[in-house]
Image (cartoon, rainbow, N blue to C red; front, top):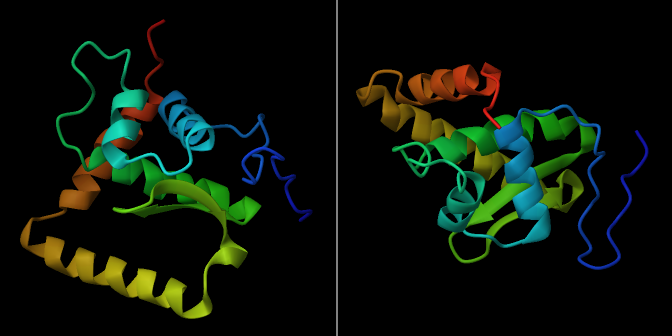
Length: 139
């Protein structure tokens, strides 16, 4: 696959505009591209700004959307990277150090093991997000 072009202003990879994404995921992607380093709370506020209820009650829903976006973006060798000090940004998978990806997998496995006490918590949120993505958005 050819490398994606890089924005001359911010240095981020430019995502093909014809990438098929549900509206919420498109808003997440657009928000992170507009503001690299955006915090999870700012991202949540931006994505659900038009929602009269302020978006989903569970703040972890944004993490599920990011996880699903990472799966879609892996074909383009991209992923979202988030940290409490630097916020969310889009990075090339080549920018991730070899040991770092195994650390991410280990942290993910640890998180899944801890959530076993709460039966299928991640699965329930993922199902809600997936069902929401399939509903057409009101204009």
